[in-house]
Amino acid sequence: MASDRVAVCLVGHGMPPKDFPRGRLLEMMQLENRPSRTPDEEARFKYLQQKVASWPRTPDNDPYWRSMTEMAADVRARGGYVDVAIAFNEFCAPTVPEALDALAGNGAASIVVVPAMVNRGGVHAEQDIRQSVDAAKSRYLGIRITYAWPFDHNDLVDLFCRQIDRFR
Image (cartoon, rainbow, N blue to C red; front, side, top):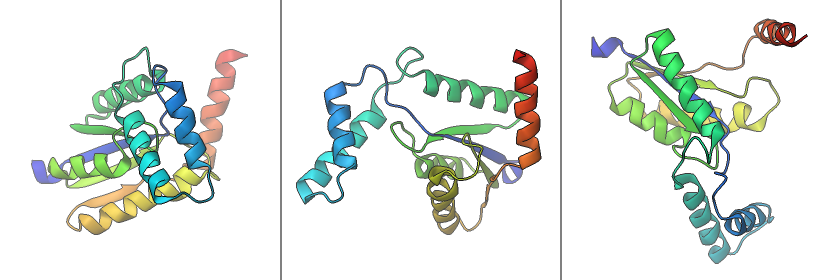
């Protein structure tokens, strides 16, 4: 039944595609790091952000995007979720608000947001993504939106120990 649908939004950091013009990327990063920007510089920065985010992605030019896409497909298959979206904090579309808007528009009764950034202390997981989730909660009062973070410390230790055991 559509009203029982649980949607999932996997959030990754995002990377610039390998074939995005390096001069434009450097210009964007220089503008981003300026303590203050003129209105023209701000407009240029926003333009470059949009260009890099909307650049066509392929498995070759963005392995991180490919990895997130594969992860979403596997979560969909293994978890039995109908709607699994990916979102990115920067450099790649869709943004977290865009992905949450799309999932809400697809009729989800609840949305679980899971970041790929698993450890505490990072500004993206602790602030940026949480702010996007909180804003979506305000927009979609009839949908339960849950931010599945932070990860349990012991679960992460178990994951890391299993990974270490694979390679020792």
